[in-house]
Image 1 (cartoon, one colour):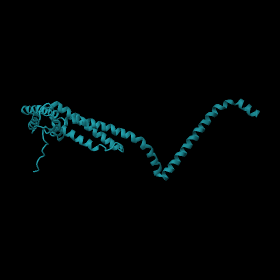
Image 2: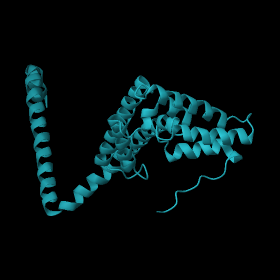
Image 3: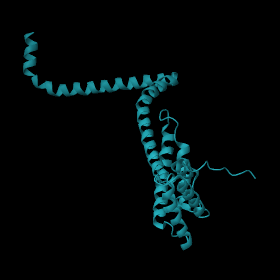
Image 4: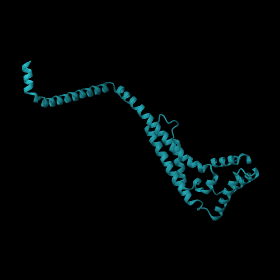
Length: 235
């Protein structure tokens, strides 16, 4: 025992280099153990190809699903915002008269906007859950295109206003704009509103085509002052 203590006392300095050796051995042992574990996992994957993959997927889906659902809801809000901007025209006959190219399908920018809207509407998921990353990317791209196309069409419509019409046509548009204001004025009598509505439609005939939603909204505002819109008779 005394000899051991004497040796330890005389050669205490060997502790430092030996500790480095032990650390290297320990690291190498740990790395070798990790390599053995990886080899065992690879062999297990080869023998059971579906098990580990299924487990990995099960771990990933709960993590990805909430994020994808949040992204879908965000894109849907973007979609709704562009729809809201468009409805501010579609449901307001007076505004469409002010900016007639917003419904003029002869205008390339208007056609591009309406096509982009249809594309975005067709890709909108029925439910925000269960949407794949690929479908979300396609939907986001369509909504972005819809937003951009609307902004371009709106900017152009506000720039040109009714400049593409002749002086006589602009006068008719101005008259129709005033008549629409009377048609939706609750202070006017039912007869005045009915007359104003019908005259406005005549003034607009051949100038701009009001969408069905615009006409429905206008008739609802006029309320019971006019009868139901007649459907065209079959030829």
